[in-house]
Length: 104
Image (tube, rainbow, N blue to C red):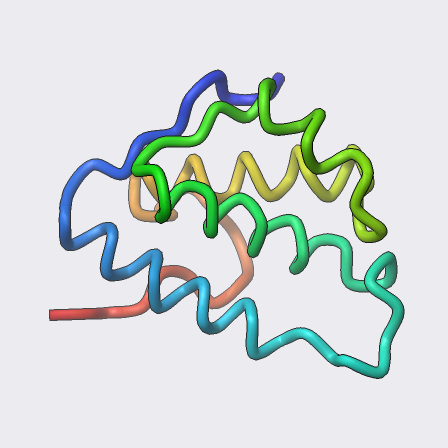
């Protein structure tokens, strides 16, 4: 199931997520089709909305993203799970990946 709502818990986590967004953006290869990079595009889309609004309603936002060229349900669900875990626990329950950056 998708998390209903994600909320950034504090300013420190906001700074971590902002740096993480830049990391995700740097992973995009402009010479690859967006659907081949769906996971990264989904994480970028979720984080942009979360950072802009301070919260993210995953079920409501899904309908806005479904028409994007990169969209797959799997990529979107995974992105929501990963970003929600970053918000709730700093990513301590995730395996693999680069995790959240250390920021002051």
